[in-house]
Image (cartoon, rainbow, N blue to C red):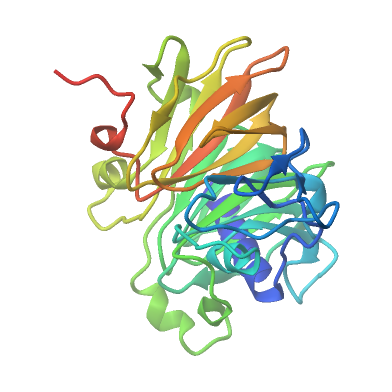
Length: 330
């Protein structure tokens, strides 16, 4: 698992460097006059396009998977590791939004019988969620294997490499906190590599089915995978500035309208489809899409599909029940 984490981190880093952003107008805001069922904005006066972002009432955007640019993640074997940068502070700024997150998220694809070079991320931790395939990961000279449904946390300054020994593509989601900075991607031949490695730690794997499931609202299940408190149970030196949860909403169900003060949420849709109502605006999403919900927005999510709606919810700062209007208090 640790090996996969490494790859995701590097890929994410590379994505930021290469400027992999959505240039198709698919990242749309709810501050415009009309949002279509695809998440594309139609503004009066221009017949289409993104419209002007309004920081005060933006509420949310939906980034469609089809609008994300694919780029090589490494100069070494550039065709064998591909990155699709989804969300980062710089991407939000490019879309005219105020960035309310301090992490970056990317899709990573490694072709069969290929791997990432050994590297580390200086002062940046990475969380990798495997969506398909099996990752053979070398992290701090420790060999790990991570299958689909596993999230691997790689601490700051930890050497890592990820290899795909399978017959199909290895795919995973990489979340780096703080966001990837190309200057902080250190390869083995860099003079800083040995010095930084002295501060490294071992990776930790979290298998979804092994995580305790909590129930929110009537039947929405949430598995908290990573947050600062969880990591400290494993190692006092581990740190992360965001929270990551695995959320399941059954067919025909949804969340009650609620507000989470002071916390911005990014939902990566793993399965199914649904609608989100944010500040009285309705937006549709489907598998592969990414939903960005600003702090303090009035929100509610409904499963509109014929199967479970499943997504990763990344919160910054980490989710705190005391800031959620939907949590009952004595």
